[in-house]
Image (cartoon, rainbow, N blue to C red):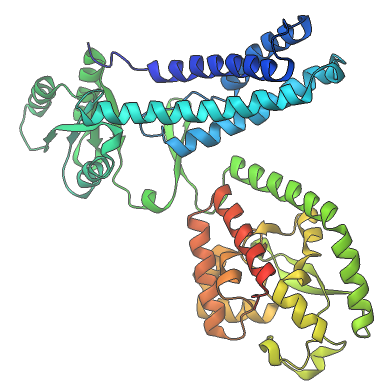
Length: 453
């Protein structure tokens, strides 16, 4: 019987997690209270915890994955998200039931510490077992490709590079000009019996596609239609339906999905709030130092270009002498710039002059990570040098830090501006929350080592 174990892995994960949660709760209770019999409060809390875990994982689709999307590190991230949501639900239940004070914080924290650790270990063991089985030739799926050329080669190359997915090619059918092409194709599929049939649409007409679908319905095979359009390689595509017609939508700009926008904005607000709260003493200290170091305002406001070219005022600690524009220089000249104050050099090297820009993040003009907002002079220069690439940067919010700022720093000429732009464009093609966190960590390292340029 084909696909005998389809859908089994999500069920294994669900029941394993529930078992781990219950065991973790019991172990944490034993550590905290030794061998006392649980009272009704903890018994009810365990029952509610199980029900809320099932609800959480169902609503947020924790266990909805397939062979291609089942990646170990992604499963770990999904587990952590589910745990955070589950903890929030439990805390909400305790708050509204007014029983939070009666629950041991030690037992509560131990439960989740043991649960997360054991669930991650269980996932690692499951993944290792799956790899072992596939290397031994079990738990494999077969696929056939109908078509030829570059698209067919891409499909085969994808699975050749990812042996761990457990896909094995069972045949390749090149469409010819036979009058009875549909019958010939069906005989090929009947002989090879693939689990998945890849149809290269550039090589097939409507009659052949319908014939493949009809065969797949009888044999419980899955059909995957592959359009021959190179733009899909660089632009993530999603499919939506207008009545019965499938519409392929290309994401032509970074963060064009509502989920990406929401996640990035939420992260920006939470991180900015934490920085402004815990960094308040440093903020006040720097305000005083800037005020007494040289005459002039504490903050420096300058018009910069933001998303879609919208002009906004960026906020920084003043690092130059008052009326520095009289020197006639456009860019910073580094440590030897006569406009920069002694304190300003320290602030620039440590990047602490950027601290007030968290206010710009609150206002929605900027993000934590993103291409640096540019002065009008730099905008005109880049529009002349690399207009198409620069316009791509304008599709996202500028950031307090970026890979370009870390690698290049303050650009003092055209070449450095273009080099920084190339780094930032590379970031847009590889965006993820993990990338943002890594760039923030690198920025903190630059600040602590005083290597800002």
